[in-house]
Amino acid sequence: MKNLILVVVVLTFISACKTPEYLPKPEGYKQYVKGSFFNVNMSNGEKYLGEIIAVDEKKISLLSLDDEIIFVSKTEIESAKILVSMTSEKPKAIVTAASLINLTSIGHGYYGVITLPINILATTGLAVDVATPYSIEYPEFIAWDQIYKFARFPQGVPQGIKLNRIH
Image (cartoon, rainbow, N blue to C red; front, top):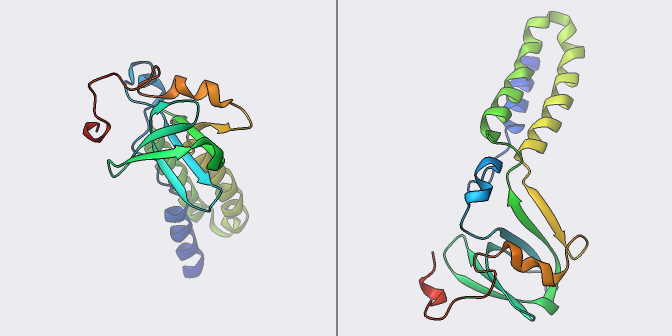
């Protein structure tokens, strides 16, 4: 029984996925003044994640989480996702509650051997879904000439604004 309790506790902590703090919640998306995030896999194996600052015909300008400006050429992109927003207003609370449901199997006695796997399957799926941001895959579901809608500056960086001063 001690081993079962240990397994339940470990699985509770494992199933508590971390949610991206940099994405807006669905409720605040309309008022969100920054660009969406672009998670890109390059043809050379490199990966980048950053806020979309501007998009032109040949490249996309990203502001990394380290406040570095990255220019990504359209021709070098293998695949990418536009991370629009979280899928829930309170993802951490939902993930925590889902994780704690697994502990209820302890109170089921010997039937906990049956209910624990069912709870883990149900709560893991819920936790992963809530912790996964709403995203759009490029190039499968959005064309290059539509990505500008998700940029901080959809019409391009205004004159007088220096990219290295954007935070």
